Amino acid sequence: MIKGTKRKIIIDCDPGHDDAIAILLAAGARESIELAAITTVAGNAEIGKTTRNALQVCEMAGILDVAVAQGAGQPLVRMRETAPSIHGDTGMDGPKLPEPRLKPAEEHAVDLIIRKLLESDGDITLVPTGPLTNIAMAMRREPAILPKIKEIVLMGGGTFGNWTPAAEFNIYADAEAAKVVFESGVPLTMMGLDVTHQALVTPAISAGFAAIGTPAAAFVGELIVYFREAYRDVFGFTDPPVHDVCCVAYCIDPTIFECRKLHVDIETKGEFSYGMTVIDQTGVTGKEANVNVAFELDFGKFWDLILGAVAKL
Image (cartoon, rainbow, N blue to C red):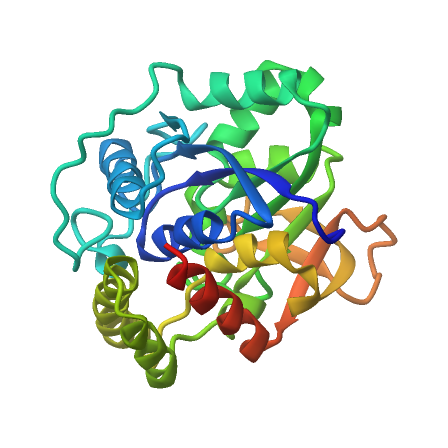
């Protein structure tokens, strides 16, 4: 990113503990990020819950000038999949926040995404941190948005799965939508499990948030307490990964990540591999690279960025 410029983004999310921290990072990095809108999708929880959670995060962080639009409540084809074992019944269990006074925009998320892109100068990056239903619906409804999308920086996929042996949750939850997005020709950067499992909240990082001493930092601390227990109980992790935060961090400072341009296909027909991101790392398919795939992150730079941004809220 050129010094002194801002990256304009729309966060399309399903909060979700790590989605919440991603929103806080964007809000605390206003010198680098212009948050054009937040849209919600069913994923970690049902759509009404993810929308309420997004509004709660915005309200507690003082994000009062950004539209929050509710989007798709069901995948394009399949039955809805949620993740209460990881995020609890509310989708953001742990912190106790009041019901939000903020209200969602009257405009549907898909309509908002289309409108914002068509009105833009081609300078908006879409940052989906949940299933790709809204993005795929927008692409299908109005193909004229495709050349208007600067980039899509998404959380999903990987060379292994976490919801099935082959598939990561966000892609598995709506693989048909992911296929639309991955085949759209829009520049894509993928934050998959290979890199997001390096974005771990160690005890030292938790102590860093506690030392900030603000309500926003305390909120992050409460999120992490719940998330740590869930990841330990379900996946056996000692420290939880904050997958979705990687997307916003990349938009602020891509040098935190090491990426490779590769061809990625989405499996939608396999009995055991539905939702798999089939990543051609050796060029065996001969297909042109269509995704910038992240594999490594600089742990120190990553957490310095996040702690610094939350401290500003």
